[in-house]
Length: 105
Image 1 (cartoon, rainbow, N blue to C red):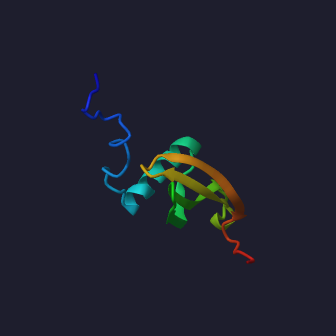
Image 2: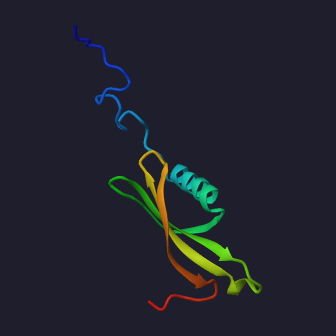
Image 3: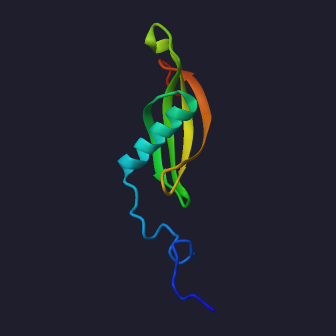
C-alpha cells in the first residue's frame, strides 16, 4: 500500500525554499553569537560580508591580545562561514596584526 500523503521528512518539503531568507542583520547577529561562544573572542567589526552558494561568508576583526596603549593590541582577522540557515560551519584566522598598523598592500 502506498501512502500519497507527504510528511515533513520528504525531499519535496524539506528544502529551504519554504523558509524565509535571513536578513543581513540576522546573519551578522548569528555569526557574532556563535563565533564568540566557540572562541571566547568578540568581533569588533566586519570587513567582508557576502552571500555564497552554500550560505554566508564574512571576515571579522577581533582583539586577540589587549595591550596598553590600545594601538599596540594584537588584532586578528577571521574568516567565518555560515550555512543558509545561519549556523556557523567554520572559521579560520586569516592574519594577525597590531591595531595601529596599516596594510602594506
